[in-house]
Length: 144
Length: 331
Image (cartoon, rainbow over all chains, first blue to last red; front, top):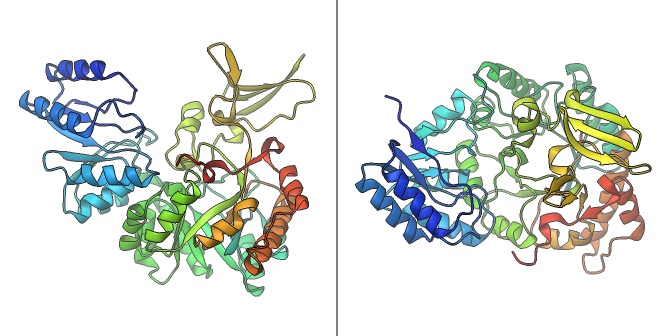
């Protein structure tokens, strides 16, 4: 049965708007909800602990919750946050960069890859499936 | 520090070798590489000559097979890998996980470099490719500051190559969708950003318009030098202002920080521009060769010469150069 998911917020919304959005998501028909900052690490209105709290609430509403990782890592502090994210013991992680894939597969954890992670062919998919990939977002550039 | 120069055809390859490149990188005449432009790249016959010309002079040939095959095209990428391997090239520059998996299994003794198109910015990410495909070198995207590059080098399991000169764009290579958005074709899928088939130059009473698949990218007045219309370098109206909203057309030039790149342990300096002319390749290679030699023999006393800077500025986009992300004091 095909499920419906809500991807991570790409916009820099204010805190209240984010909280309201996930309140609505909890009551929505979506089965899976992706949470977290994927665009810019300088956006700090919602902290890691907040995402976990939102995730717990969504889970109580029956949603499968996935924590999404940052797309482009540059600063060492961003790697620190990614490591923490990949160690979280509550939720599966959506890897949006190869660093996250490496950390998660080394820790023997199942993961999902997001739209900015390039899987264009079966051979790539097979290798990543052996590493623990459980679901993937198809690149928008992939032909039918 | 090895000097790695671009060659879009045989004359460019000779220009690079004759002007002191330690290695040249080339591509085949199809969408298996990220500079798939009409009239560029190597057929089997010219490729054989290219490899011989470089290797006879003790230089290296790297083959870029750095786009992403879709399921129905995978065989073409396999064939490209096989062809390069059979001609005894010095390394392949690969980006796609599936292609890396194939190449490392089929040709375990062939050196593999990770292309900038893989968009890998961390030692952890490099570790993935090292563990799984035994890559021997990584080319970093042009998004990191010098201190961030230094940090990656310290932790990286393999030597690091960085860009030293050439055109700049948004630089999240392999993950930029702007060209796909405007034309349906991109480096990943077609081997070219803003393919020439979608470019139009329009003369108007008050200057030139450049369009990409019909989308107005820029307007140049009388006497203004028109640039190639890539979406990221267009002038767009944002609110009240019309300006380079995403990126200024400018080229990276690292002459002023070569000693620093050497000090932090950069293994190779890459010059961008397989789509450029043999004259460009000759000029940039000669300047970079002189600068690197000077820097290697006397890093303390090294200063970029005015003449080098002028020569590089003359072949730069918009005639301007920048240190790009390398110089970001806040990072």
